[in-house]
Amino acid sequence: MSTRRESIEKLLENTEVPLTAKDICERLGISSTSTVYDDIEHVSQTIRIKGKEILIRPARCGECGYVFWDRHVARTPAKCPKCHSEHIIEPGYIIQPGE
Image 1 (cartoon, helix red, strand yellow):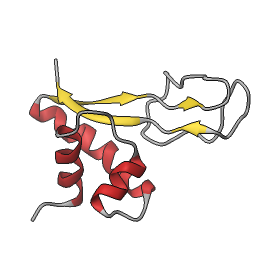
Image 2 (tube, helix red, strand yellow; image 1 turned 180 degrees about the horizontal axis):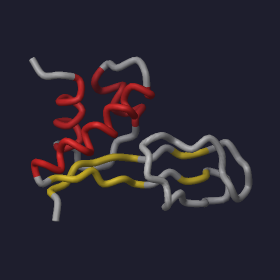
Image 3 (cartoon, one colour; image 1 turned 90 degrees about the horizontal axis):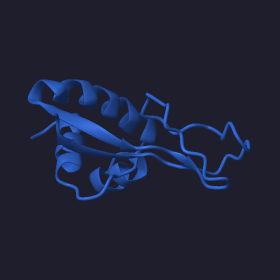
Image 4 (spheres, helix red, strand yellow; image 1 turned 120 degrees about the horizontal axis):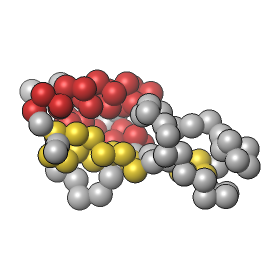
């Protein structure tokens, strides 16, 4: 039986498209996206040893299109710094072989 983090790692390795925290919750039956965000942070550190990396499709504003390129945390931002909208499209995650 694999741990929750191992299940997240396997899911992100075997997907063709980046998955959001909500996608991961739905597919693995996890009730809290904050748990998934914490696990993604941990998984990103542990997979480096295996020569892999998590690629992040950055969050973006659903109103003005601002892209959060400079964020280095897994969590979704609360609001857009440009237009102050709270309509934020979640970041997506996928695991690829490292360079």
